Amino acid sequence: MSWYEIFPTISTSFIALSAILVAIGWRLIILRKREAHEKTMIAASIAAILFFLMYTSRTIFVGNTNWGGPDSLETLYRVFLIFHIVLAMVAAVFGITTLVLAFRKNFAKHRKWGRFTAVVWFITAITGVTVYVLLYLMYPGGHTKPVIDAIFGS
Image (cartoon, rainbow, N blue to C red; front, side):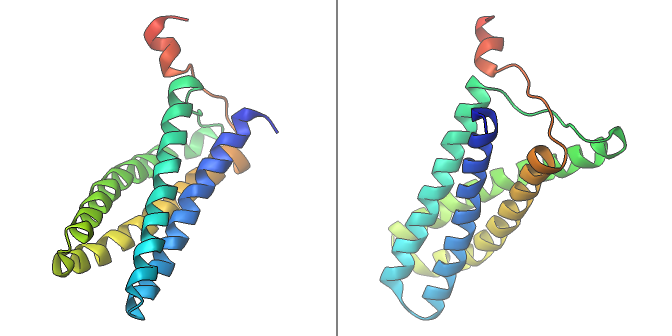
């Protein structure tokens, strides 16, 4: 397995782990285990940050993966990918907002934001894993020029 295949697998694992931890954290707060909830949600956030750092580093230094599947599915895939990207941006903003509310001890708002944020995060994680499966397992494609090369002309 090459670095080209390893990084997406590891980064996608962090997204899946983050969603699992959010589900566990949600259950913990329902059980009124606040300290365990807090620790679990921080771990979920760290997993999401690790994904983001790996994904952006890979995009800058290695490049993105092109669609390798049939032309008949490419438009559908691109619409799905755009949906995932927009949802991921919304989830990131909502996640940060939810964390800030918790750290400021504004638990009434945190509770309201948290429910919605968790659901958006679950959908983001599921669509992210689906993108990984499509690009690396079902229809492996090539990858584009790294952003850093495009900027500096390597």
